[in-house]
Amino acid sequence: MNSKSSGNGLEGFLTGKGFYIVLFLCAAVIGLSAWMMAAGNETMEDLTSSDVSMNSHRIETILITPDVQAPKVEVMAIPEPTEEPAAAEPEETEEHEETLPVWNGQSIAEPEPLWPVQGELERMYDVDHLHYDVTMRDWRTHEGVDIAAPLGETVCAALPGVVTYVQDDGFYGTYVTVDHGDGTSALYANLAAIPAVNVGDWVSAGDVIGAVGATALCEIGQGTHLHFAVYLDGETVDPMNYLPA
Image 1 (cartoon, one colour):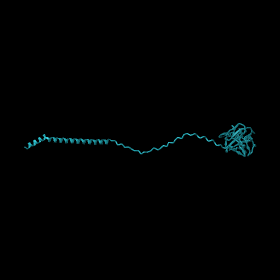
Image 2 (cartoon, helix red, strand yellow; image 1 turned 120 degrees about the vertical axis):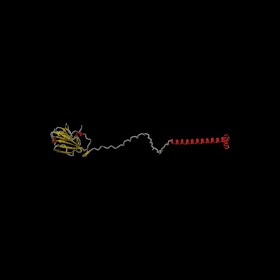
Image 3 (cartoon, one colour; image 1 turned 90 degrees about the vertical axis):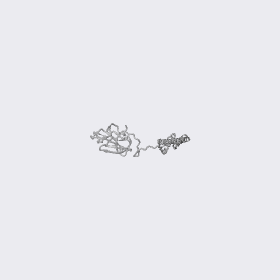
């Protein structure tokens, strides 16, 4: 009796309005659940894509260098060419006469040297090599030139100056020395025994000094000649540098 009543009641519920109300509520619950699940999945996808985007983003480091200013370069203007000033005219200076050497109160003008005697050169000046000496029979240098000339031939001063020595030497015989006042002096040797000048005499170029002799014992083996030598500051030099060519 009771079971029939229960079965009839259930059948009446299913066929009545109650069944549709329950069905509508179930459908609503299912739809709401589906919507919530869909919304949850979309949110998770957004978060996931956001993380991927953050992870895949490249972080660049930018170095900021200090602002260093380049040194300023001063540009100099090139001056425009100007006309060169005219060369200053040399100042006029007073002309002074050249002071000539003076010896024993006499002015020595520019001398024109002369040959002290006319003749051929018998022996030349050479202090760098040894030559055989026919008189001394040995090898020696020669500090002057020997000018061959006849016995008694006149000997003249080659350059102007003052007579400083008139002597008779055991080797070079009678000789006369003339100082020219410029550091040079000339020796005239192998003269005749009595010269024509005395110590202190002034002689000009061409003045007679003496005559060719045969008094030089160190050169007696040669023919008659004049031994002529020149000294500069006491040192022998080549007489050919002071004689006319």
